[in-house]
Amino acid sequence: MLSSARPSTRPSAAGCVCHLPSVSAHLTPPPPPAQARCNHTATHLLQAALKSVLGTDVSQAGSLVDFGRLRFDFNSAVAPSEEQLVRVEALINGWIGDSVEVQSSSMALSAARASGATAMFGEKYGDVVRVVDVPGVSMELCGGTHVRNTAEIGGFKVRPCTRRDSPAAHHLRAQIVSESGIAAGVRRIEAVAGPGVYDLLSEREKIVKSLAASLKVQPDKLESRIAVMSEEQRKLAAEVESLKARPARAP
Ligand SMILES: [Zn+2]
Image 1 (cartoon, rainbow, N blue to C red):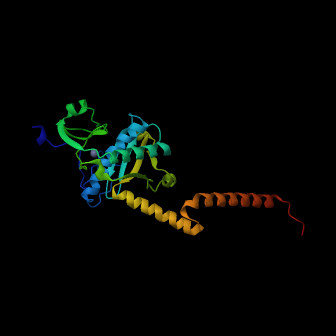
Image 2: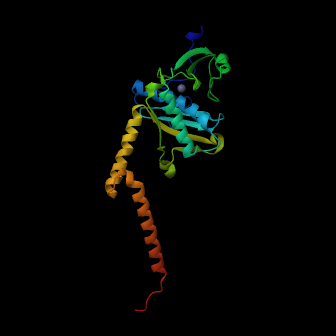
Image 3: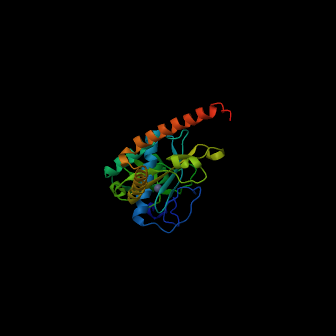
């Protein structure tokens, strides 16, 4: 019987689903199930959005869903631009707002492939697989837990990657994990979904308020204040250079 067979994707001990052994997966205490479901379904939406914005040759290279975030590694010849990442976020938040029913069913691997379900390249699947379908958006082979409706996710936001070994990572919303050997062109996106979006935005608001207080301006004047400061700094630096270039006076 098809329904008695186990799906071949693997829920991990942390209660999250790693489609591939992740690059540096740390096991954490089980996340609240609702948060895990939000993050996991959001991962499927992220893959669909990346295919839509960057091209259908984007393929998943690994993922990790943990307590407060989701992480998605994918193969892509080019890094997504900031503008493309904004479109990815907008697509996902649109699908969340559309309140799409999420369906799952077990079926023969051949039937799943014929229906166009996305499978992980290089992953070994059994004869029977579980297919998670967000109609009109995404269809993936997956054994993990999901929300019943995309509206449950609440929201989605890409956040800066936190890899400490890349000084530039804090400024990037998607970063290259590796460009050599077998992992050439593998890129990483970290994001938050559900309540994590509120936490991330609150954290950012705190930073903005603190900067505004330091510079003694309202938050909406930060950009112009910093532009003025940069210009002053540029003029001062030029003045210093010109003073240095003057011949020294005789004592
Ligand atoms: Zn999945």
